[in-house]
Structure formats: structure tokens, C-alpha cells
Image 1 (tube, rainbow, N blue to C red):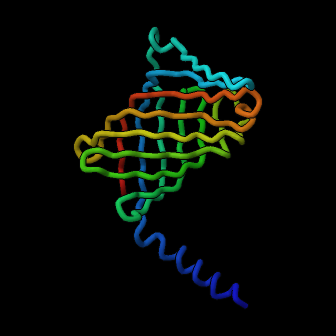
Image 2 (image 1 turned 180 degrees about the vertical axis):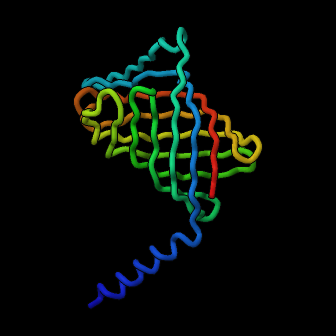
Length: 180
């Protein structure tokens, strides 16, 4: 019988949640500035490699997110989905966001992954064990435009346990952030 009051309280909390939450839509472009991988062999020797492909080529990585966000003190928390596309292939995954606004500066921490949808040429990738943490800082220009820099890790328990490799990317970003 103790479960019924707990279920009622949980239901009331879920119903009250939309009263103070907002819908947030972000779309923009990331420009990879550095790609690489940090690796450690089984003897404990740390190594780091960086791909030099970006010194010769610049490519744009369009991205977008749809989040349901709500304020918790000075932090905005959000839950939703994030997507990246290379035109012929699009990746969508669940995402959690924590954002701190410091005047004209916004610092975002995104953590996503665990389940992926692929749309495009090749739709049969197995990436369920991949987690993508992303830390970025943006300077707000006007009300909706943000310019900044960020870094992303691609953690997979399968990849890390077998080769102790942790791929990473540093990027420049331009983003439009709309809140409804």
C-alpha cells in the first residue's frame, strides 16, 4: 500500500513538469578543428595521435537538437535528441544537456548515446555501447546566435576494453538556439 502514495506523487510531478519547462531547438554547424585518439597499451604507456587531415581540408558537420529543458537554479537541464548529418548519412541519438549561462557566455555539457538511429546509405551500424560526452562554450550574439568552441569524446566500452583507445574531436561551432 505504500506504493500508491509514491505513484501519485510521481504522477503529479510528471504532470507539473511541463508547467515550468521549455522546448528548445538548436541547429547549426560544427567545423572540426582537430581529430585524434588517446591510446594506452596494456603496459601502461600512454600515446596520443592526431589526424592531420584537417590541415588540408575543411568540412562542415551540420547538427541539430530538440530538447525539453527546465531551469534548476542557475543551470538549465534538458532531455531530448541530437542529430548529426553528412548529407548521405544522418545519426540521431538521445541526449542530456546541462547549460550554465554566465552573461554572454554559455557553457554546455551534453551527454548522449546508448541508442542510435541511422538514416541514409548505410543503416545497419551497431553502436549501442557508444557514449558521446561533449563540452562546449559559446559566446551569445544577439538573442539566438551562438559562436563557440567545443570538444567531444567518443567512448565505447567495447573499443576501450580491447585497445584502450579514446577518439576525440575539437571543433568550432555556430549555432542558432530557439526557445519556446
